[in-house]
Each structure stands twice: as structure tokens, then as C-alpha cells.
Image (cartoon, rainbow, N blue to C red; front, side, top):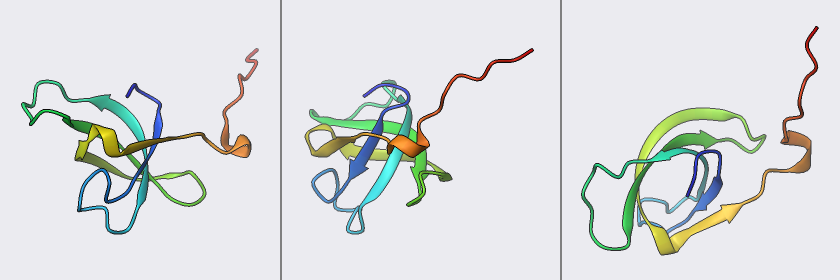
Length: 82
């Protein structure tokens, strides 16, 4: 997972996600020691519109993380300044 990736977290990632959430990854936290196959990530929880609603640190099973594409209407486009 890299900064900017949008991931979908369900119980496959951790039992804490009984209600699935979508997260935009800020970074992985490699300095935190974990069990094999697990990772700490820092990210923003997104609502249905794709807006950040909470900043979170999450402990997840890497194999249970689903990559998600941003909806086309939410993609940011370059802005010309000047």
C-alpha cells in the first residue's frame, strides 16, 4: 500500500470492520512491529461521497485489504494558476 491508495476494509482485514469502511492511505507504519502478514496503516476514513471524515491508525491483515478505485467524479484534476 502506498500513499494515496484507497482501500476497502472488511472483516477479511480485521474483525473490527464488521461494518466495512473505505480508507485513503497516508502511509504504512513500518516502525511498529507486527505479526507476519499484518501491518499498521495511517489514513483517512472516507464517507459515501469520498470526503475524509476521520483520521485513523489501523491494524490490518494485508491479505484482507481490497484496493478500490476512486469514483471518476472525485478524481482531482490539475488546476492552472496565474
